[in-house]
Amino acid sequence: MAPETSPPASSTNGSTPSKPSSQRSVITSRPSPFMPSTLEKILLAIYPTILITGSLFSLLDPSARNAPYSASTQSHVADTAPSYFAKKSNIFNKLFVKQGWAWITFSYLFFLFTHPSIGPPLSVTLTPKRIRGLLRYSIVTTWWIFVTQWFFGPAIIDRSFRLTGGQCELVEQADKGHIEMDDTRQFVTGFACKAVGGQWLGGHDISGHVFLLVIGSMFLFEEVLHVVLRSQRVKEERTVYMADGAIKSAEVEAALDSDVSVQRPTQWTIGAKIGLGVAGLSVYMLLMTAAYFHTWFEKLTGLLVALSGIFVTYFLPRAVPGLRNVIGMPGV
Ligand SMILES: CCCCCCCCCCCCCCCC(=O)SCCNC(=O)CCNC(=O)[C@H](O)C(C)(C)COP(=O)(O)O
Ligand SMILES: Nc1ncnc2c1ncn2[C@@H]1O[C@H](COP(=O)(O)O)[C@@H](OP(=O)(O)O)[C@H]1O
Image (cartoon, rainbow, N blue to C red; front, top):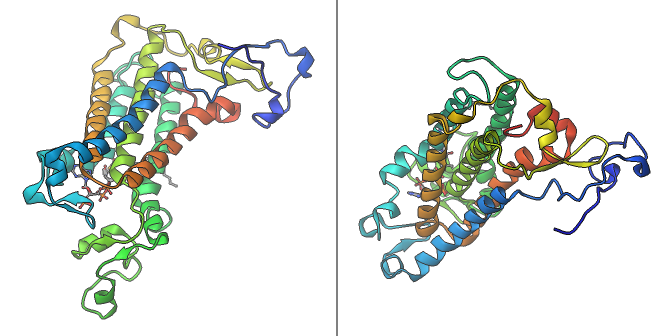
């Protein structure tokens, strides 16, 4: 890798260097803190690959290509759907994705409160690592709420749909009083529209499924894989900006934090396996969404909105020591 020197602190994290740059003790040849580790590069490459593979499959597979597709519902007609997974009523959609955040939440909390390198297993003791894990969970959860459930009114997905010209197909009937709908929510949420049997037509419909499945699985991969690999002493590649602007390995901060002793033989706990299982099923369902639902652009925006939440939670803290002090990094 080409040698790289630390940039001035003021140009990177806004803080004032504690020493003049000529006296800085560490001039490193480390990658930028914004650079994903090898593990993260693989994970980040998986998502666009899945979306492209699924979209290509829908174009090339004869049964998918020939099955009637409804552009308004962005799905195949149920009776002639080319596969079980092309039906909205499939059991994995109903019980897993539609309750997706509950699965992410329970699997993460179980992992957080059973993994021995984070705190005493099966005890509710709030160690610093657990508190930081809960804070990261809260940030990602807040983003999920804002994007899919509520954003000071309608969720971001609904707002963006309306802003790009979309509306409920039943808007005229409601105006004439033929349909009853809550005034404050009238036609501003996809949920309100679908609740009275309408379709949400016209604008750009960011894929909620792609968003949820990407942010949920990436959250679990970041939390579980980093903790497990680090506690098995796999070499750490993540780098961070220190307060004086120097770039160091995340190892330095892990070395300072010795609140819980590492118990190496038990790192692949049942909690870690469940977390990775939920993440793996999410990735599989993402492939199904990519193959049978939505336009490629709606899938792309779902991906980008999800990754923006991941960036703030897992990459920004590496460059901003103040934020890192509060929410930490998985495994550190
Ligand atoms: C200022 C805000 C402060 C917020 C504070 C931080 C939050 C801390 C934690 C709050 C508790 C949240 C607990 C969450 C527990 C649950 O998960 S219960 C809800 C379960 N429901 C779901 O999982 C629904 C998932 N579904 C969806 O998001 C959408 O249905 C969809 C899949 C994205 C798409 O929907 P469509 O209708 O198909 O378009
Ligand atoms: N993998 C999948 N399996 C089944 N249905 C899916 C799916 N991915 C998306 N859908 C359905 O496609 C529609 C658009 O999804 P989204 O906008 O969340 O990406 C939703 O329909 P409904 O809202 O009628 O349930 C959703 O249930």
